[in-house]
Length: 89
Image (tube, rainbow, N blue to C red; front, side):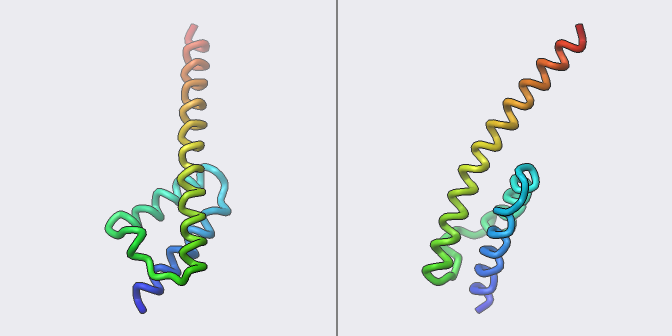
C-alpha cells in the first residue's frame, strides 16, 4: 500500500505542478523528477488505469512544455546578450 500512496502523491503533485506559471512550473518539474524518478522508473508507479492515463498525459505534456521553455529561455538569453553588448558601446 505504501507504493500505492507514493504513486497517488506523485500524481497529485504533478497535477498541481501543471497549474503553475512557466518558471515556477519548470522548477517544480525538476524537483518532481528528482523526487519521484531519480531512483525509480515510471513502471514503478502503482495506479489504476485512469491514474496511469492521467500520469502519462501529464508526463508527456510536461516534457513538451520543458522543451518549449528551454527554447524560450535560450532566446531570452540571446536577447539579453545583445542588449548588454549594445549598452556597452
